[in-house]
Structures are given as structure tokens and as C-alpha cells.
Length: 104
Image 1: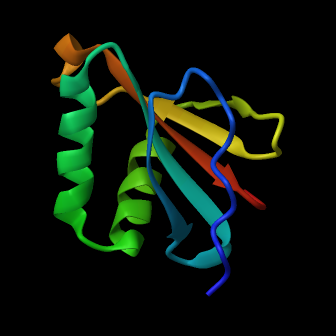
Image 2: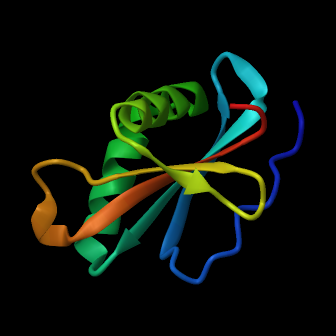
Image 3: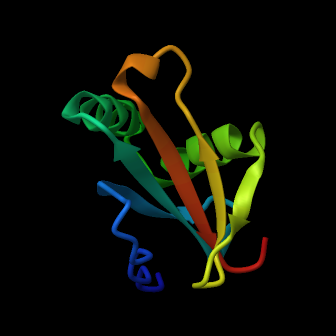
């Protein structure tokens, strides 16, 4: 199994919650990242990710959430960034960002 690349360097990222393979294409990596104004948001996302148990299911969860929302843009590291907010948790004021490294 290839080694995971380093997460993108960005001071806006409060925490990198995971770096996982795309379930169908090992050349793609998902970085699941939170940017939040409070610890409650990070704790909530970590709970949701930990419920999924496996890297493949985390990647699938990230992919399903990302494709239902607009692409935020191509990043300097060549990744594609998808960004969305978790519905029903606006009081935590945070977004989840997924970086996909490799061919989209």
C-alpha cells in the first residue's frame, strides 16, 4: 500500500481528521479536514468519522458529501478541494474540506 502524502499546508486548517484512499482508485487521496470556530465542531466530526470505522468508508462518506456540493477550487498542490458544511450543526460554525490528490 503506498504511503500517504503529507496533508496540504494551510494555516486555516484547524485539524486534519484523516487521509484515506479513494475506495475505487488508490491513486486518489482524501484529506478530511475541519475548519472551525470551536472545539465542539471538531469533536462532532471526529465522532462521525470514527463511527465509520474503516478508511474506505470514510473516503466514501467524504465523496458522497463532496459531490453533492460545488467544487471550491483547484489548490496550489494540484489537489481539488470540495467544501461543505454539515447540515444541522450550524451553531458550531465549521466547514469540512476534502482535498482529492490525483486525477479527478
